[in-house]
Each structure stands twice: as structure tokens, then as C-alpha cells.
Amino acid sequence: MPEWLVHTIMVMAAAGGRIVRGACCAMDGMAMRVGLAIAAIVALAGPAEAIEICKGGDRAARGVTCLVDGDTLWQDGVKMRLLDIDAPETFDADCGREKDIGDLATERMQELMAHGYKLKDSGRKDRTSDKRTLVRVVLPDGRDAGQVLISEGLAQPWPNRGNKWCGR
Image (cartoon, rainbow, N blue to C red; front, side, top):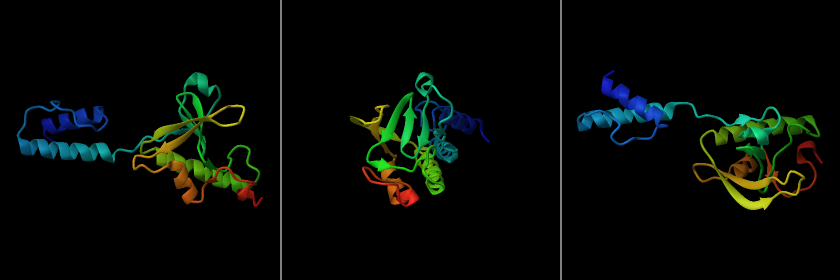
């Protein structure tokens, strides 16, 4: 592989796949286009980094970013809940089916967020003792991740009554 191409790929990888002006050595236009095309493919083909599933305590002090379940997350040590959805519980599930679907919802949210996301703060807090910030997770294509879970049967709209996962 030509040295200029290796350099181009290394610069783009270091820049998170972004094209950096003036970062490549001198080369003709065709070589530049080929190098950038290959570098872009290499950068885009790499695995996306998934948000972790929460482990351990003291998350606020540790400033962690992780998923608790399909509708609760921590972002930089702040606990948040998704607005307008209710995903099945994974820790205090009322039945085995709720736990199983809760695990699927958490995995799906992790998969959705692995491709990038933005948090849209509603400016409101939930009514629990945690007073979690209510947010929407907006995906790169503009979709609301919570609504994706609802459409896929992995969550339900909030507010609601009973526990549909356990037949109540």
C-alpha cells in the first residue's frame, strides 16, 4: 500500500473518520480521491461503539454513561428516563416474560444508540424519588428511539395501566 494512502487512513482514523483538510501529503487529484474513498470505507466499516449496560453503583459520582433498561439510562452521571414510553422491567420484573422482553428492549436500545444519538431534554422530571430527567433519544436518521421500541413491540406508550407483559 502506498505510504500516502497509509497516512490518509491513519489521519482519518485518528479524526474519527472525518476528512481533515491539509492532513495528507502532496498527491495528484486522482490519488487523493482514491485515498479518501478507501479511507472513508475503512472508517465507516469499523464497528460502532455500543453504550454499555449499567454495572456497579455510585453512577453519578463515576459520571457513567450506560443503559439500565429500555427506558432508563445514565448520561455522564445523570439518570434519565425516556419520555412517553414504558419498557418492561429487567431487575424487578413481575414475571419471566416481562424480564425476557425487558432484556430484548435493552439490547435493542443499545443497538439503536450504537450508531449515534442525541438527547433531547424535555425540561421535565419524572415523579419518582429519583426525579429523573425526561428525555427523547434521537437517532441520526431523526427517529425517536423510544418510538422505535414501541413500533417493534418492545415497549408501550406511557402513561398506561397494568402490566401488559404479564397479562395484567
